Length: 191
Image: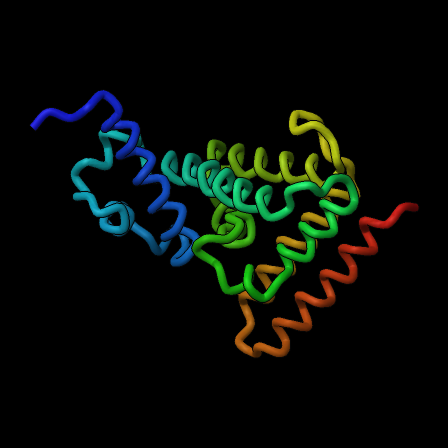
């Protein structure tokens, strides 16, 4: 059977989407190539036709997951700009629904500890996501550097969501999200 010229690109995209979901749901180290390919509905033997290593897959999956989350977020925050956008971002990011949506949510909170132990390509992808989000929160062009305040608010959001996902007590999880929303809102206020 002959495949169309875009078959390889479509298969690669399918693998990246599956990897993004499974890495966020189970963790990078707990998800082997076989699990990723199974999630994509493919056989493991085809993996190396698309990626040189599992770490390369993680670097690319981070980018794709962040792009997918950004597309949904921008639709939800359409028409907002500046502080209004940032406040709405914080409210959505530190929400109970985002806490529950691990496999479809932001890859920063879901994979933070694993990326810290990863190699340079993965860290470069992760850093690009941070810089892009930080610039967006600071209401700057995507290719500019975010200010320290935007980075601090982003760190509070990512850390707060990670903590809220890591506790069993639902009331404590909500308290963490609420407290971080309040502090992040203060960080968005003018001097």
